[in-house]
Image (tube, rainbow, N blue to C red):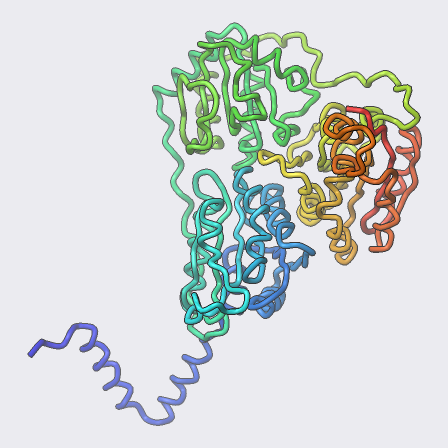
Length: 563
């Protein structure tokens, strides 16, 4: 006969001790144990609060309605969105601005998860940490055709950094802590977490949610630092290329010190702009192609040589490229690297700067530069102003501390050309994925996380239309932001329509109805409307918009043939 296991012996010993207790003591013990038991909805809320999450962006539905309420009771600031993709975009942008995992997204089960996939793609491509908490059907009903059943982990796995499931109520805290750790470690990204209905409705003693100590900083490789310093100091025309990845650990601070010490010219990715000022005398962002072609050594930090930098094709063959980054496979695009320093830029950059200071104690003279300013174009002959003219007028009147969010196609390019970013975290664009429609969710997140700074969204009509009803979200929460809509009647105005379709074709796929009044539609949602018909009237309209409460919108009709 098999001897009893250690676990059974321990269980029997506990039962014997319970049996020996007086009835009153047994009742007190039972009450104490039950007092520690919580429903899964509350376990989620308590775990998020313990992890330092302050904001929840959510779209209600089964089985997470009660979970959203539990989060509100736990003190989280809840923002209810109008579409699931927007919840993830808002939470991810909030985390980017805040610099940590401060916000999560929550959606219901079924097609709500597929609706959220675009937001997950945007966060993952941008390297922004975010958790998507998604409802799921009861686990016993999986595969039986339950209402809103979908294997969310299966559909999200190709997009997300990782996918986890809280398989029981007791596992919720541990699962969320693991998800938070995965989202932030290495290259940040999006983690999908399934919350099955039975885990949310069940009771259990909540396990503590502890993300644990951050991973130890990579010890800088002395030989690699020396080699990098030698390459930079020995170059005749060195160039720094950086992107939004230097946001984490506030790595843009030692990066600025490195630029100033070496007098190192630099170009920034679209969303990296402002982390070092566009009007810095060493900025070459406005002349990106020429700067890349002239460089004889490139230092690449927190950026990818993807489409943003034309895959590095403008860098002369044989030019040594040194990369500082967490460096996963997504950062391998472009020419081969002469040297890679893998790790946190916030740790490696100060070490590199210290080594360079030892080798070159005094900074070199500042070279001549035109900076990042681009002259405004001459006036167009068209009756409507061009996007360039509007963007130039806007650039001259924006508050210095404004967070500018850019979205669209023609509008985004014009705004990037003329509106400088001078402060860290003052510029948001669609980012690596180029996802149009992200502008309004990003602006809402900026209004939530931007600590009172003015938020101005400059957008085209197609881009605004994709998440138009999030204007009601901004109204409902009294968020102070200004939308400047440049309406060119389509994705790229009339120009692409005429190129792609025969003359007189009735299907206006690439050009919409002329002069649609998005401002009047927004007014029905409670948005304040300010009038501006020309670039000359824009400054006064913007001042009125910024001076009021809640969201405001300014619509200008622009030349549909301008590019």
